Image (tube, rainbow, N blue to C red):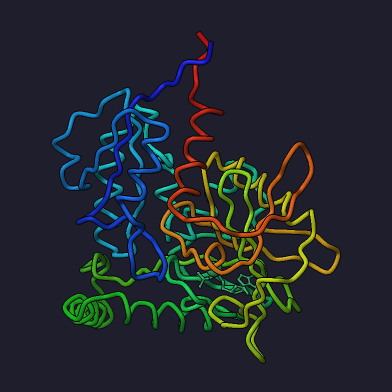
Length: 339
Ligand SMILES: Nc1ncnc2c1ncn2[C@@H]1O[C@H](COP(=O)(O)OP(=O)(O)O)[C@@H](O)[C@H]1O
Ligand SMILES: [Mg+2]
């Protein structure tokens, strides 16, 4: 007999926000999520992330969390969730996937560890010598805002300087200049190093000559695809606004996306995928929580794998039920005990 491992579910939110809904500034509807969860769990509760630190984690409850795009709140989620769930397996999605959110450096490290088909990249805070065209990315951001093309060490330097000015407070910038001058003129070696501006970034292998990329959302076995063309005279598609929801997509793109999600052991995922001339597919970015739902909301169709066949279905889906159904499917597949 198959026995369900979790009788109850709790939605972890911050100030009533569980990101993200549509449009991107809104939350998913918590009441709708509760109603959907009640189909699978006996009791469903809401818990604010700040209450979680005093809360005793219940082993028969599945805690469903998102993350935040506010840097400090994201860090807060990570701190609380890591400590509270370090020796547990009832956090959904699992902790590594929360860490990967809005962090392209972590995404690459995790993809390598899991042997995923992710474009090769290097994560660093140091200066680096590039010889050929390379894609440089800050860790967070969207719509290509921190993505640029670099060809030399000095291009990287310019970009990190720009990031530093954007990300560092005025006081730290002043202290950085003060200690830099002191080191230069007084020859002091380590003085004030903690005020150095060491921006974190990734260098990713450049796929030349692409006209588009694919934004793919996978919920359980349901796949939503959006084709995005690159801006005129640019290599970047994200944020271009040149969207096509109705293009024909290859079966290999659907297969790639579904197995990428399964290999991440995630209930749902948002993938940015590129296809080279020879048909090779590669992921350049992924998010397992708090990702934009435009493809799910606007695509007229989605694709579902049914007994080894892909079926094109009319899209009348609702974000909250997709999320909950995917979670339930994953619990069935991964967290059920045969007794
Ligand atoms: N390695 C790459 N080779 C070629 N184009 C890339 C590569 N990485 C990103 N791009 C292009 O840049 C865009 C933005 O990159 P992405 O990593 O998705 O950043 P963002 O978080 O801003 O969406 C992508 O939509 C894609 O068109
Ligand atoms: Mg992207």
